[in-house]
Amino acid sequence: MQSNQAAGCDNVPVRLDNATLERREMWEASDVDIQIRLASLRSKARERGAFGVREFKRLAVKVWSAA
Image 1 (cartoon, one colour):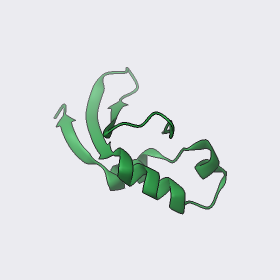
Image 2 (cartoon, one colour; image 1 turned 45 degrees about the vertical axis):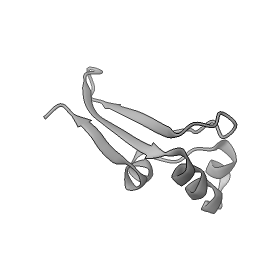
Image 3 (cartoon, one colour; image 1 turned 90 degrees about the horizontal axis):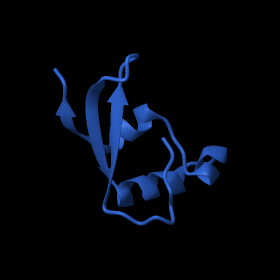
Image 4 (cartoon, one colour; image 1 turned 90 degrees about the vertical axis):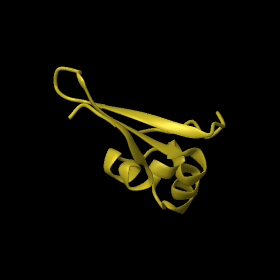
């Protein structure tokens, strides 16, 4: 997942697909929480504004599930 730090928004949604691109889940996290987490990373990922889905899910709330 990559965040556009200059965009400025309230929430960031992420849609997770299966191999056939069918929606499985949607998660949403506060932009503030994401920016705080990115600021705490000490890697090239922080410079790119990126971190993995698993990390995103730690900050986020599931807002929809296909099951």
